[in-house]
Length: 589
Image (tube, rainbow, N blue to C red; front, top):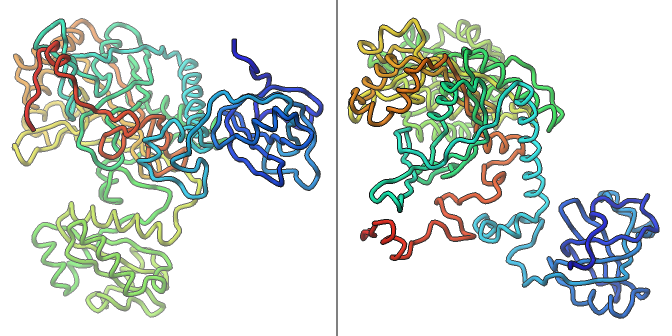
């Protein structure tokens, strides 16, 4: 039987417990030896408390206390007593008291640590992932995992109030094309056949709607075999919702309510709803991205009319070749942006494909510096159009439309950060709606879905699917928070004939569509209701709430940027006997 079972937690003791005898379990966080008196900081999930092994302690307790090292797992029984007044630590909940041990036991020892837990300098990330069981003991990781738990609890309560049922969908499914590669699982009892791990629960949640479930959600584990890059994870969590007999606005309202609930309960921040809505077209034209950070302004201005009326030949050539010219106004940056800083900003534009960056300063006399000589006669019009003031800086890009938008988007974000325009601890949500439903694959000259192949075209575009697919706008919507896409959804196709038309356009003639998606087509044909849904990227949402720069900081056991787990060294090779059982063989690579 486990001796010295805890009767209290380290972080729960205070001045009101004075004189109480308690048993604590935890880890040695810090040790200080002051002339033979040992001050031991004991830590558990709930906080810290100080143990003092002094001359009043028994010889047995002193002998054990002298041998303790960092991260030893121990049990201690003792009496709560006040700290000397000059040793009170107001930064600790238990900072007014200490524990005088009467019994001390080492439950498990610990070798020298590969890095200091909760040290001033954060350890190398791969080292932290290799020793994740140590990293999970740090205050930061535990706070973030607690935050994650609290968010899941808040959203579950909210969705239950909204009449949603939490239902699990399969994780061993049929392989269907959803954009990325599937992770495949061979079936031993069905040689030559494979399951796939789901990239999303898309088909099954639609079938739940066909089954009359009406409102469904789950915290779904999803898997995508993508090339290792940036902040992607091969497995991730999404809050998956689907609703019957609804349209776009119904889904948006539920999602807004969920976000408002989470931010109020977790951060005590009131998020104003409804969120701003922007069409995909206006978002691209004004911000150069469909994921705009609206914590600051700096919207683009179409500068093409001013170029057309100027003698600036370089930008006129851009317009004649079908390109576009756009500008942003950097408020108060005329003096802070030296020529060196402007040159650095120009390198940002060049990294996105632009040939250069034009600029002008706004003064009391008009425009000066840079390319201002080409716009002398239009200075007042330009200043009025851009709502510029003396001391502002105008930055201009002229190139192919995509390059212009991409380049100016990067510059906008850089300038917003440099000028301190992004308010700390602020959250700006917006919906991006009215996306094109299809886009051309330039390599194969075929059409592909911009979101996924089960999204519904808006009714007024139904007659253009075959003849003008590039003009078709879908009932699609993305939720953006601080420049991050955190959710994506759509109204689904619920009529089987329309789904067949879309599949045919995307390269799935009826026979192939039947082979790949027959079970969904059958479900739709049996009176499936109109339905719509959304999936929220839970890891990314948690990253933003926790104010971290990577989702790896809010996941208990993430993979590194190469898709590898340094702790358990997965993925790994498989024993030849296991391969044989699965009717597989390894190939040279």
